[in-house]
Each structure stands twice: as structure tokens, then as C-alpha cells.
Amino acid sequence: MQKIQMKTPLVEMDGDEMTRILWKMIKDELILPFIDLKTEYYDLGLKYRDETNDQVTRDSAEATMKYGVAVKCATITPNAARVEEYGLKEMWKSPNGMIRAMLDGTVFRTPIVVKGIEPCVRNWKKPITIARHAYGDVYKNVEMRVPGPGRVIMTYISEDGETTETKTIHTFDGPGVVQGLHNLDESITSYAHSCFRYALSEKKDLWFSTKDTISKTYDHRFKDIFAELYENEYKELFEKAGIEYFYTLIDDAVARIMKSKGGFIWATKNYDGDVMSDMISSACGSLAMMTSVLVSPKGFYEYEAAHGTVQRHYYKYLNGETTSTNSVATIFAWSGALRKRGELDNIPELMQFADKLEKATIDTIESGKMTGDLALITSIKDPVVLDSEGFIKAIRQGLEG
Ligand code: NAP
Ligand code: MG
Image 1: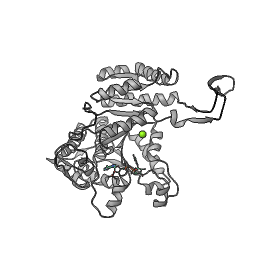
Image 2: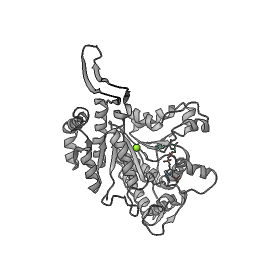
Image 3: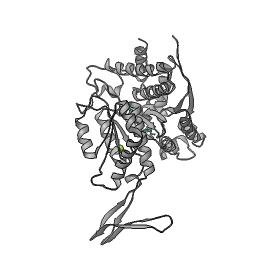
Image 4: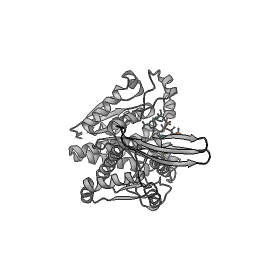
């Protein structure tokens, strides 16, 4: 059998613990036998990040900007326990946070829909992708307790000191609390670009929601920036692609989503996305069935699983015990990246392979073969629980059959 040839390399970001074990199994069983794989490899495993003072993470982000498409394994974000466990020189920052900052990107999360693992919301037939703006609002707030009667004001002073504007937030009769929030036109604009681009890339409708009727300046600014950008740069492209941009109030969006069939992208403000992404992922069964892609406003893509390194399973694995860790989201990170690479380099076989790999994965589960986490929640009768490797091998059989 002839292997599929690639033109441009994929940026490959290896990671930690159980997902690093799955990473190798996926490559060996599901990728390398079928594709003459070209990657530029970066080891984001914690040990090597520490050895390179995290330079490897910066290099991998630079490479993503050079080649356009990356696939990333889950990585440890160090805390005090990890500093001790790995004898780290420093408590290195989250690689995902660093890469997102360097790419100025937005994360889009999509559940993987399989028959037998239906979402709690019965009418959701197609996945709902959620995007969360990752800058400002309550996550960069300044807040204060107000001890007693008095006035709290908000003042703007221009850099040259000439213009000022002051507003009273509240005149307090007794104790209370106050909070200051901000956002930046630049960040909102980048976010909007990422959302419009991703909708075009996926050929899905884009929804955006804020509370602009109550927040007539702050939230309204988000609405206006999206609307202007859409009119000036994306309207024609959307019409050509046969997709829609739809703005609505956050509460209306929530109500509509519960009644919808799914199949669209929902862009949210920072806090709404924090809350609503947890709702959507739990309604869809499992974090292990959720893909995640980071999209930069310039159109660079980094694909990964939404879950972490599955530390508890890794320790079992190290003890020589059998694990049944779900590799679906990591497989879909690979298929997503290969499909995008095929699309950008015009290699139809690569895109078809990505489709086949996803279908073989879904078919395996729908035939009743799955990992332990899914067996617990499936409506399929008498599922066969496979171990980590057995599940990947079963997909390979489907892929070859
Ligand atoms: P986690 O790795 O997502 O795992 C939490 C639990 O969820 C697991 O113990 C397991 O439950 C279940 N689970 C998650 N993924 C699974 C899968 N593929 N198959 C089967 N079960 C799965 O989160 P964590 O334990 O909080 O974090 C571990 C490490 O991951 C941390 O060091 C954190 O920094 C890192 N992390 C990285 C990323 C990323 O790189 N994107 C994201 C999140 C966390 P049971 O134990 O009950 O089986
Ligand atoms: Mg949350």
C-alpha cells in the first residue's frame, strides 16, 4: 500500500504522562502506517521544558506561526507539587497559556458526537462549538470593599494628562463592594477575526452573544466591533460559504441553544464562555470526548484534546497495571490537524484520511468497543471495555478493513 505524501510539515508538540503514552500509540498504529508523516517535533514534556528553560515552548509557537498548523499533546501545568516531583528550576507557566498569548489565539471546543453516548439535551443532534474570549472582564478586575458611607468614582486620565472624565459609580449609604472591569478594542477585534475565520474554515454558522441592552457602552462595544468587522470583511465570504452570522442577547442565546439542533459555533464573552463551556461539555458526557482548537486571527491552527494528561491513569500505567484511557480526543486532534494541512496544501488524500480515521474511531465505539469511561455512560447494551492499547488497535482494524 502506498503511503500518503505530505508537503509542509505539521508542528508536533509532544506532552506529558498518560497522554504522552497514547501519543506514541496513536502515531504508531493509526498515522505512520498510512502517511509518510512529516513533522517538526517539539518535546513539550515537562522535563525538556525545564531543561530548555521553556525555550522549547516558545520555539513550538514560533514554528506554528511559520507552518500554520500544529497538533499538541496535553501537558502538565506545573504547581508546587510538580516542582517537587520533577525537581524543576522554576514553576513554569502553562504552555497553553503561553502559546495562546504568542498566537493571540482563541480556543474553540467541540464535543465529539457518537451514537450511544447521547447528550442530555435530547434535541442536540450536532455538536455545538463554543469559543471563549480569553482577555479581560472579571478575570482582570480590580475590586474593593467599601467600608462605609461615601462616594466611589471612576476616572479616565489621558496619557498627556489633559483630558479627564469622571463618573460616579455609586454613592454608598453603608458598606458594600465595587468592581472595575476593562477590555481592549484590539483584543476584541482579534477575537472577532478568529471567530469569523473559524466559522469559514468549518463552514458553520456563527452566533455571538453579550448583554448589550443592559451594558450599553461596554458590551455594546463588543457587539459593534463584531458587526463592523462582519460588514467590512466577512459578509461576502459568509454569503459565498452559505453560512450566517447571528448576534443575540446572552439570555436569548441560552434559551435558543437548549431548543436547537446544534451544529453551529457560539462565541461568548470571557465569563459566559467559562460557565457555558462547562455546561456543554458535561451535557455531552465526558471531557475525554471534547476537541479543542486554538485559532489565531491570522489563521494559524493548533489542535489538541480538551482534557489534561490523565495523571491518575499514568501512575497506574507506571505500576504495570492495565489502563483504559480514552484516546478519542487526541485522535481527533491529529485528524483535525491532518485535515487542515491537507486543505492548506491541497492534498485531498490527506483530508480523506482524516475523515476515515474519525469514522473508524466513531464506528469502533458504535459497534460497542470502547474505553471504561464511555462504558459507564453509554446506552449501548453490554459494551466491550478495551484497554488503552486495545481500543487503538480496534480502530486500526476498522481503518484497514
Ligand atoms: P485530566 O488529566 O483531564 O483528568 C481528570 C480526570 O478526568 C481523570 O483522572 C479521569 O478520571 C478523567 N479523564 C480525563 N481525560 C480522560 C481520558 N482521556 N480518558 C479517561 N478518563 C479521562 O485533569 P487533571 O487530572 O486535573 O490534570 C492532570 C494534568 O493535566 C495536570 O498537570 C494539568 O496541569 C494538566 N492539564 C493539561 C491540559 C492541557 O494540556 N490542555 C488541560 C487540563 C489539564 P478518572 O481518574 O476518574 O478515570
Ligand atoms: Mg469553567
